[in-house]
Length: 464
Image 1 (tube, rainbow, N blue to C red):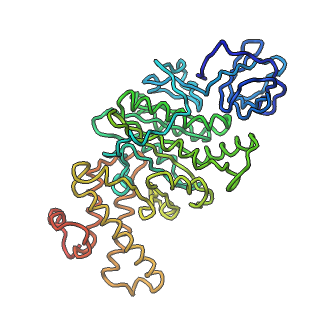
Image 2: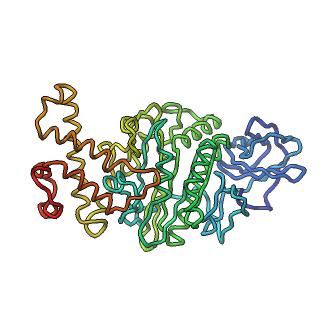
Image 3: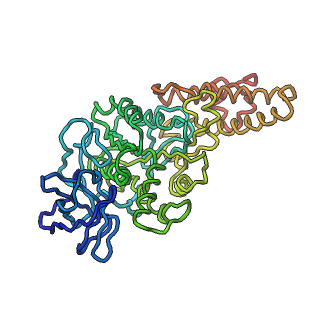
């Protein structure tokens, strides 16, 4: 554990009691919330904690490593006077650590030329540069229709049982920004050991190339660590981007696990609960994470954030997805219906949206026909869904020939464009050519959102 070291601070021997992961320290002075604490036993063993509450000379501290085996009478507590800080710099690249930054790969502790407070700060709006240019994920459903833009925050909304972790790993493993320096910071929160192994295996190649920082907080790790994990990830990413000139993609999964940890810590602090027992500051807390992405005027590099969250019972009005939607710039929504059909990734295109897509796609960015193709695909898909509902009511035999073409288009869209292998990297040119093949299953007269020049170039006919 890396933290501020101030040997001049007083060490307290007044640890009154240990309750589960909590330590209660009496007779303290000048101690504040989120202050970093270093515990030392009489044998020299060190453990670490954060102050959850401080009132009338008593501090309640969450011990990150737990309190098992500790004797309060033989314990000293040193309050460092500042929040947790971590070293920053290129030394993180290629490393695998736990959620509080301690190595899991057998290597030495991560070192850096300087340290930064993990709390961080949102980017100053005055210094923000508008997001621009694309981060290509190699996933057709994302690159074609909800293009991720450098400096954007674009969440993935999923539900239990859907392959959101596999999708997050695939995006982290194969995303690119062309020839420019690019890195990925992957923060996994509350995952099982099996899922942690899946993440490590899926990202092994990118890690070996020195282009990945991997933080793994498993379900049996301390709750307070789960709150630190995304903050450490973003702190590391900010230095790689704005100090090292890299474009950095930060993947954070699962933000619902993070919010539940926040709720648990809030309860331990005795705070008044709000909606569904989450703390009333859930919105501002999530915003303090998401708003740390972007680009800074005059500095190279960018931080792009892809939070992944599961919606309990698939409820998009649940506080975590609901508040996330207010803060972020769109969403990628996964569909149970597509997953049941064996389509991977099961992205529901009509529910998904990238509000900054026009900043990173189209002429001079990706390809001249990209935005027109995306608009026509979504328009045709909306019509196809209406036709499918009509067919369920009146029967497919009652449909017009054009309506039957739309049913065929719907199937071609799912199988020919969205569906791809879990390790398949699709270049954007391949994705857009697949999109054209899907569109050309419709008569030319139905492709009204595409310029004539594009239709002629791709041989569109009235027969489809």
